[in-house]
Image (cartoon, rainbow, N blue to C red; front, top):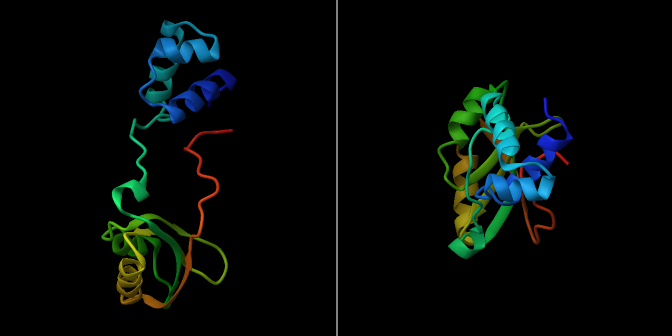
Length: 148
């Protein structure tokens, strides 16, 4: 469990995972050694699972994004769904959801033709009965994985 100081440290790291303990300490009013102890504890507790870089997909040529709803036949297990969608590098997130839809997939593609190809491949998965896609016009809010 994290306290308000841990949450503040996590917010700083979410913006810049390369921030030094001293830089973090300046922003949260702690010494560098105190920040290090807290970060080490959060790593040991599994709160912090690693550090990464956040890329701009559009700058890398992936300018089209969509949410694809997959409707599955029968009672398809989440493990079957995961095994199928993990094979697609264009799938950036996938979740089972409530309601009529069985699986919601977030897809990034180079362009509309590429997106169409990905949706066609997803629709051809043996357990998929139909799909419905929604193309993203503008991504208005994107937050790093951190508690408010």
